[in-house]
Image 1 (cartoon, rainbow, N blue to C red):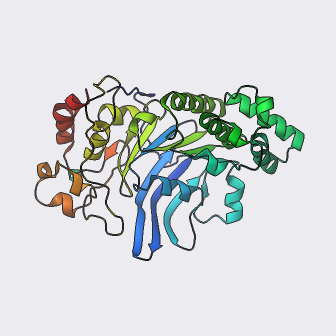
Image 2: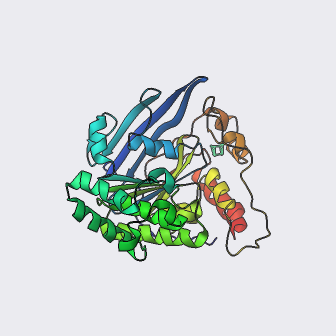
Image 3: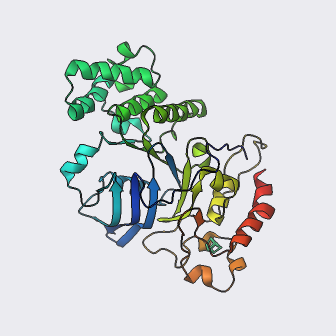
Amino acid sequence: MTTMTKTEGAPAPTGPEGFLSVRDLQVTFSTEDGPVKAVDGLSFDVQRGRTLGIVGESGSGKSVTNLTILGLHNPQSTTIDGEILFDGKELITATEKELEKLRGNRIAMIFQDPLTALSPFYTVGRQIAEPFMKHTGASKKAAWERAVEMLAKVGIPNPRERASDYPHQFSGGMRQRAMIAMALVCDPDLLIADEPTTALDVTVQAQILDLLQDLQQEFGSAIVFITHDLGVIADTADDIMVMYAGRAVERGTTDQVLRSPQHPYTWGLLNSMPRLDSDLSAPLAPIPGSPPSLLNPPTGCRFHPRCTFQDRVGGNRCATERPQLDVGRASACHLTPEQKRTVFIEEIKPRLG
Ligand code: SF4
């Protein structure tokens, strides 16, 4: 395995009072075909100065969770239950006006595609300066200076000249940096990054991840980093939560999850990751099957139709009984702790190299 971890032995995200605390979150969409429970009973905490990586395939509920935190869901067709506490403030019941005050100011988001966040009609400098003016009341001149300073911070060469460019005059990597500058211009307390490096080549990807880490150290923000790729957050996240079909299935520090993963789905994710030290012609081992439809999700453990370990649990338990996720370092699986340890060491680890 080529993954390196950022923290070793740090506490798992257990505390009842994260800077961001999500408790038993349930998000249900009304569709023509019936209700879709995109998030089903999710709880997690993120502390200031720490990065939580949320990992899962598309449809796992990771992006829905974060759009819900930001209040960017469609209120007509979405039902939300549970609690989202941000620095002690309940966001689910917050008014649109209150959320608008938080977004772009105390809570910021970086998307996969900068073109969804940057308007083609305005200069990059103006788009960074505007939220700063809006939230701090700074003058146009001071906000422009701040935009130039932020472009310099994210590593754009000749930032004073480039601030007057339009997004199409920037390369993909530079646009991503500009979006990060825009997100961080008001020193947000919480940054949500949704697949921020997926569209970039490996070298630029590594630069952007380094940049996020440096900026976090400087600003002390809490970061929620959403990705389908465990490898991407190995160096970046302090803690990891693995999601499958709307539920969290494993949680722990990055070190715990990558060095001694406990859940068969996490084993599958690790096994399907390309490794630098392996023969590049060797085929990856994708997880068999595909994620379930949440219109009619599997009973019991939602991973059971794809899981090759359910016979070790015995009976029909995996298909009928929902495995719970305990607090702290935990995995939602009916295998015993001893089975999880043994299977990982004897059967999974040798395959990971
Ligand atoms: Fe597999 Fe059963 Fe564990 Fe689910 S509970 S991951 S089906 S062994």
